[in-house]
Amino acid sequence: MIALYPGSFDPITFGHLDLIERASRLYARVIVAVATDSWKQPLFGVDKRQDQIALATRHLPNVETASFMGLTVRFARQRQAEVLIRGLRAVSDFELELQMAQTNRTLGADLETVFLVTAAEYSFLSSSVVREVARLGGPVSHLVPAHVERDLTEYFSGAKR
Image (cartoon, rainbow, N blue to C red; front, side, top):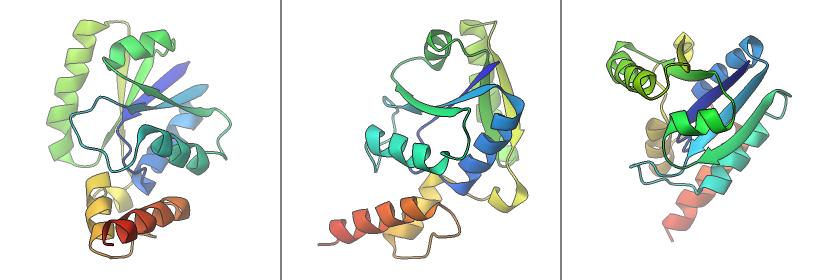
């Protein structure tokens, strides 16, 4: 069975990796799909985000990265995914995620959404928190892989020039 884990991943965090690793044990293939037409203004371009994900998941042979534009359900069908993976950090995530899951069911009744609860140590973690800490010069090595930390440091040191 193929699972699709869509998101902006700007940047990928240890919380995302926790979900990817767990999903990789549950499904034959996991596609980590970077949304390119999000309403969010990304820090990193889609190619950079895919590279960050690929490097962080290279130890997982059944995980691949992709990017997509448009409806997640349409992309899932193109890639023959039967499951959408969504992470829940806190109760506050549930309402939005449930709304998205129900909307996706109206667009593709054959596509299931599976919610994975993030490990407790990452329940506070989001890409926006990481970006803000890095922007302010704080340490992020406990939040993201080393290569992502380097990318953030490089980005924000360049932005300050």
